[in-house]
Length: 358
Image (cartoon, rainbow, N blue to C red; front, side, top):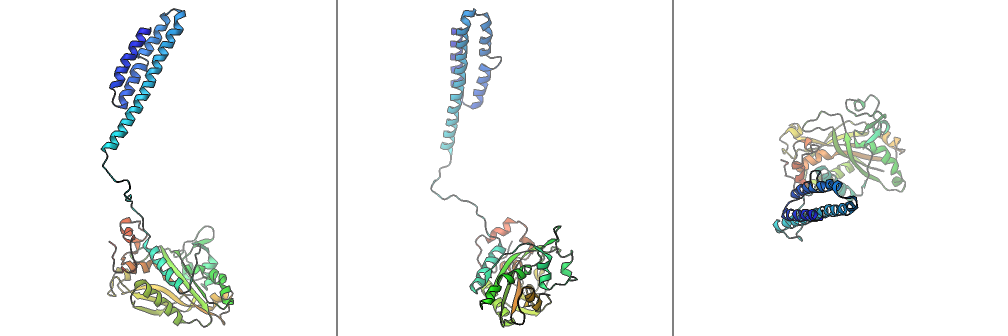
């Protein structure tokens, strides 16, 4: 038995030494330790050995088995290390101290425009507020002097939720809460100057210049003796800062229940230069900013005396402003998840006004 065991170890050692890949080691394991292998054969011969020799013979067989298992494991580790060394040696030389080249993300063009406009108004003394996207009927309509029969309340225009709430259709939904929050400014003889950007939702038919999800920035200023001249000054200052040049604007009458008088502030289309294109519906003008003097009923709903205080409000279309700023002809680009188009703004600056999205 001892001689057979020794011969088996030598035979195995020769074969395992010649193995060059892990698959060959697996074949050797099956060959020597499998049910039909020599170890099993030796175990079967134990029945023919006298009882007093079985213990010693069993120990010899077990030693050979353990030797085979240990040798296979050691050889497997050796082959793995050799493969790692081969891969390292065959790898292309590189400088480990050289910066790793990684693709970096970029801010969305609307985010870029929003932050720029926020900085401009902050420089003019305005505070910046945020507000919920899900609001109730009172703040979105009632507090803004929008009557029950107004078309904006229709389900064709507004996304109503099963919780008796709705997705805000305009940033004006925050106006009542903001006026109440900043009443202390008036009590301290300081004007209320606040902007509050946000995402809005309307049940719109989507085309090149309309989306059902878009961004606005509401702005209000309330104090004694605030007039339309103040509104025009702040809007022209903002537009001049954003576009870094004089912008042709027009102010035309517009009806909005929460302002009186109300206006539509349009800018000349920067994509076509006023000649007409799909983005401006061939009119040469793009609606940018509904605005006007805050309606006395809105001031009253916020607990302010309209006989003592006046103010203006505007709803700046950040999405449309971004279209003009970057020469984007189709509003659907913003929500398209088209990384090829949006990645163009990774290093965009606000002086690159002639850039056109491909």
